[in-house]
Image (cartoon, rainbow, N blue to C red; front, top):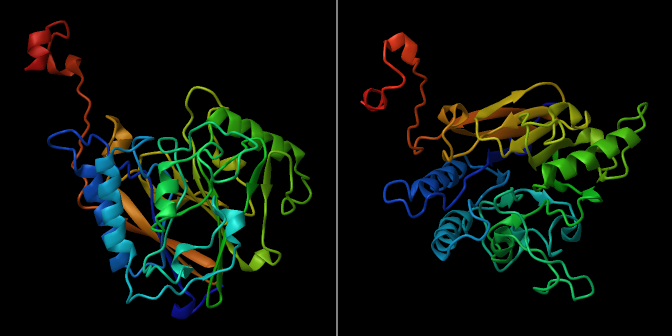
Length: 348
């Protein structure tokens, strides 16, 4: 249904910022930070209610001190704003959605958060460490940690979608309300593709075909609001979407539950920001910095504003202008008359 401006929730979406990529390069070392700074500035300029990041905030699993310092500075300068009120009601319990069980950062009276940032982890910044059962929760020897845990503890980012057991994944959503608009955002941080595929398929095989809306199943449990028809349900994930060698090496659009309204898909770097397919509609924002030499990276980079009113929503593409130009072309040597065996001529 339609709503008024007072009901409008503006979710600014981006993914795969890969902060710290090529940080030691004399020319490209600052590219990832420039683009992330632009993302934050655009979110503020759009008067976004929140910024949603779909994984790989960092390029390295253990970011350098320089990268972490630059990231904290950018977040502090853009997230904290004593003059801007956050008009989102947070209806979830922190223990259900955040790794440390505390509440959302903008409800902390000691922090003046003006731009709430929510992020899952990707395959580059996933949690690592040995999980030692029996030790007190929260101690270094008990918890597998990600660089995002550091940002979460700094109260600058709300880290959600952390999977502690890939064989028993409980999908509890962020429940957000503004006026008459209700938004349920599910987060699924990166899990090794083949393992997640197996868990996902075991869930699908156990699903009652006559009732796709009732899912408390082996492998993945979807925890949903009781009056879920009044909610816009969005999944944020970071997995292979493109076929890479084996069908089990990733998740496919057709595997997503059809009761979801939309999915924000991280990991794939090609920008396909516009919604695609049928329910759930899928948006693939793509990376904000090129990290590989392929055609997908050469596509114009965008982020987007997912505007939700009532139960209706749309994606508004926003182009990024700070991304270093990247052009890829194919040359057929046969058409040029050049001898492919002539290495010196080819180089010229």
